[in-house]
Length: 142
Image (tube, rainbow, N blue to C red; front, side):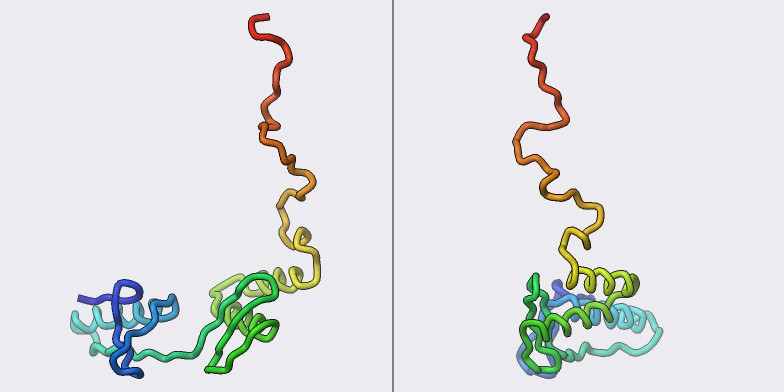
């Protein structure tokens, strides 16, 4: 039986007695290794154990806030935001240029300019009645 990610308590060989964190990064790495071990159980290669490599963390918190601990160097604020965005940009398989351009525009322009296709706030009525339904002022049956 093979398990990985949130479905498994994978022992952390770098910290005896503890399990690896249930993060997407570990689930991806564990999934790749689980696939290789399934192939090995069918005669193609040799099975290997999962070895956890903690490189730190990056978290965007919205706005200009972020927290990061790359290679165990604690960062916060704009420095953490830059590291977090850089990590996420490098992790993306496609659309890096578009994403980087969006982030750059978001940093220097008002938010409405960046989010193309949205209706501006003043154009949206704040009433509970549906504007698409026309109310009849004549009594029923006339």
